Image (tube, rainbow, N blue to C red):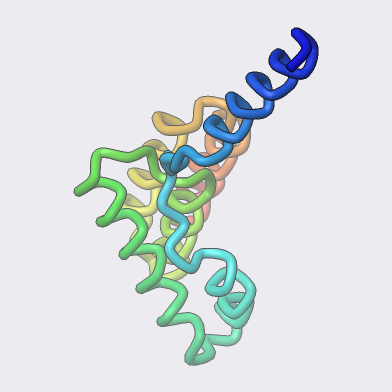
Length: 122
């Protein structure tokens, strides 16, 4: 076997090993995409709205229990559901937590918090 063939075989072997390793998830999405799609009925109060809320709660609980970072947007979405029910302070706490988990959301979440306080009068 020539040196180039041996080198090629070695690189192929290393690449195969690297691809075969199990990836570790850093976020728990737990059906979020399906729920977000179905949850578009939130404004109509459809039956999917409740399932969407339950999915968000499950994602948050599982992520907290496993010590994983919560997927981006999940805390904000859950906060929005709370805000729609009139639970302004709880909603704001989830908006603030979204910023803690995802600092890049700060501009939008700061605006959302201001809007929530303005609407509720607090």
